[in-house]
Image (cartoon, rainbow, N blue to C red):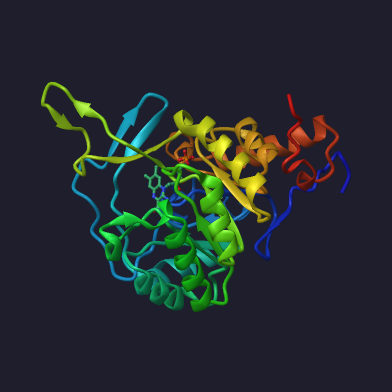
Length: 307
Ligand SMILES: Cc1cc2nc3c(=O)[nH]c(=O)nc-3n(C[C@H](O)[C@H](O)[C@H](O)COP(=O)(O)O)c2cc1C
């Protein structure tokens, strides 16, 4: 590859990706919802919305609320369940010819383990474990806020599948580096971060929360500096590929994550504003490489200069 046509390809957890740009779980449906808005075969990978063992109805409405430079959501993992996903969604998803990463959520280690077994089928390239789920065996405490629970969950999922396992970290923790290390020591093949930050907003006239679920997850540009910082911390702490996300709206934002240490990036809330954000980010990365004489995007992963 020459500087005129830079190499954007990356390898994450054994998956070959033509570029480092993928969807963030829950913001891109199962991919096909966005057909007609962009060429899905041009993406680095497609990450599905969360799949659970059984179908889930999700939370009461309203489920989303716009906030300054972002949004709150409390969807509640609405999905058709693993078997229906495999039968009805996966066959079409595979046709785009890019790696399919399935985001998985559960309420207990046993449920996650069973889900990993069910999802280990042809056409699924990796599993992304959403550790932000409440663990019913520990009074509903999120797996991802505790090193031991994160480690135990990671180990259990890895033991249940031959697929690469990406652990998606919660930002609602005191020290992201410790949680990242727990996932790495348990054998994670990659980590992704950040999930949404816990948030809430109130309609003062009605004296009620805006969301039916009372609280929700904050995403979008408002969280980007927090996300870039956490990726930077995590990259210093673990020797694993990192998928960075949180408020990426354009290539410049994606580059912040890459320079901070992410090997790939995911675009979430931006898909609701401009469905073609991902291909625009890919183009912007290539332009940046040309302007900065970068032959391969991997050369600038973690290439942040100090001061
Ligand atoms: C509406 C919505 C639904 C989401 N659903 C999931 C999900 O099912 N599983 C998950 O791991 N993350 C989920 N997320 C978190 C995103 O994947 C991402 O980590 C977060 O929104 C930060 O990226 P962004 O600021 O680019 O949106 C969801 C986010 C939004 C906005």
